[in-house]
Amino acid sequence: MLTAGESHGPALTVVVDGLPAGLEVDRALIDADLRRRQGGYGRGGRMKIESDAIEITGGVRHGRTLGSPVALVIRNRDHENWADVMSPDPQPAEAKARRALKFPRPGHADLAGALKYGTYDLREVLERASARETTARVAAAALARALLRACGTEVRSHVLRIGPVAAPENAPWERLDGVEESPVRCADAEAAAAMVAEIDRAKKQGDSLGGVFEVVASGVPPGLGSFAQWDRRLDGRLGQALMSIPSVKACAVGAGFDAGTLRGSEFHDEILFDDAEGLHRGSNRAGGLEGGVTNGQELRVRAVCKPIPTLIMPLRSVDLRSKEERAASVERSDTCVVPAAGVVGEAMVAWVLAEALLEKFGGDSMPELLDHLAASRARWKEMMEKHD
Image (tube, rainbow, N blue to C red; front, top):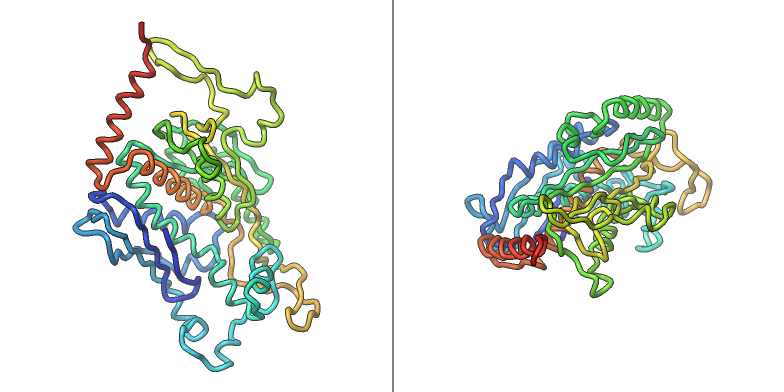
């Protein structure tokens, strides 16, 4: 997956390589994921301008992948208001100065990016560092979700915390059915109402809120990932993918940080057997991963989102040239992005799982891939049963 494009540029582009031929592509499902990313209580004015929809410009014919790279484009409707500022062609000085970002925001990539690339024009950092880039990732990962779905794996997410308000943990898969009906994508109605009220308070005060979301994958085949090398461990790959989401500052698999408070006898998921279920577990504190490999249980990963750094009541900063103290720049922004970040988290988990699934089962076409998966399922069934 390779993405390109700026927040207020003409469009976002993404190229996806390595999908098997014959995967069914439903444009409406991709657009539905883009709408979910735009939603969630606490979003700002930008989402009222954009109405994200995908254009497929390569790699798909008559609703199916060809096996060649798939190219997707999402137009930025707001670009018409920024055409001179974001033009790829040389512009007069006044055009470059218009809407210039002069005072770096604490917590954003502004200052770090300026130091990295040697620029005093923070617009050159903001435009690519913006979370708008995740739109392209969600579009690309919709293809990965289609691949997983064809193989019997589904990925969902829900919000566990916004600011000080927390929902009950370990919501069963069935409870996640109604998450998209919640304005904050929370499975618990009482907690959701309190989260909405907390967002309203923060918005009134010109502040922002972070929180925690969980991604749950059901029907994950065992054996994805590897313990053979450090960079093949699936928990590490999931951690990198989740931490690449702009607002995420921490992530955890299964019981996560709570694992450090328990004894081994309390934490580990005992292995059981009976004739009805075969090999199974009585708990899932490992979150579906052991030794960097999926074990056939539900995959559960959580991520912590910081409050976004653009504040209506800005923090202190400095003029990067004069070094005079100034208030940090204020851009049009959100109060809380946790519900939307959960959708991006779904996308990144789906992407990593799809990559790992193709690595294990291979196949240049969907029939070939599904044949390989079916053969493995037959072998797993045999291993799960009792033998005399």
